[in-house]
Image (cartoon, rainbow, N blue to C red):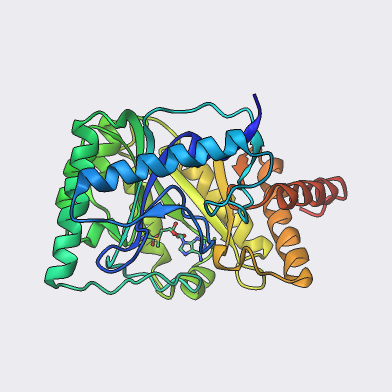
Length: 336
Ligand SMILES: C[S@@+](CC[C@H](N)C(=O)[O-])C[C@H]1O[C@@H](n2cnc3c(N)ncnc32)[C@H](O)[C@@H]1O
């Protein structure tokens, strides 16, 4: 039966997003860039917070099933909210740890998260509450034992709570969103012990000059060396996953694209997530739209020419359709 929902609602994604020491709706069902994304506030009582979270998800499912039109719980403006034959996971199927403040050495030109570490009692208490909440959700069986844990709170390799986080995901499927400035044995061990675990690098460039421009740090060689070190510790090919945020006029030239494809070949990575600056997702004009479609299409065409797959999770259905159409045209006319 078709009803209104999305992957994240149906698979019960638990996202811990943004400033945990002072934000409202810190525990969300998604991290789509809409101000009304459904979520609950982190209260002092973790049982109450979890009950509110599960309750919110039940309300969303009920509304999606009962109403023919979009619901009032914040999903109305979202490109991922659509009619489908969704299956309902009774457990939390994905945990996204993107809590802040958390430190990161990158100065990515598109990133606006709060990267400055703050060492004060409010932050400490908020982190303790998050760990308590996750431990309670696990001990009560709410989290699927096969859930994937996304570790993207600042930069994990320099995170003040990194040992707690590594312990939390020790025998679990985890995806470490790292900038790879630092090679970390703990990550390598997790990759070795859990074949479904991965690292994810938002590479966003294929040449040292573009990397420096996008990341604000001139260390592309250090990063590629660290990737090779991780590669030598993998338990299966494909555990190094990559994402490319297409930034028209900055990193969308063929030299960067071709070099990324070569790096992927060396690292046994056959799949690339083509992303975009999500802060501009719901507010681009016609010219921006056309340029983004063209820039993403060049990358898609080059990947297909090299027998590589891709996904475009952050693009709308219409955008994906347009990117594929332009990429097919580029391939037909031998433009890549
Ligand atoms: C904030 S980073 C932290 C992880 C890691 N330290 C890093 O440097 O990639 C988490 C993820 O958010 C993505 N991100 C941050 N700002 C974004 C934006 N405006 N649009 C798309 N992705 C963004 C990054 O590419 C990265 O994959």
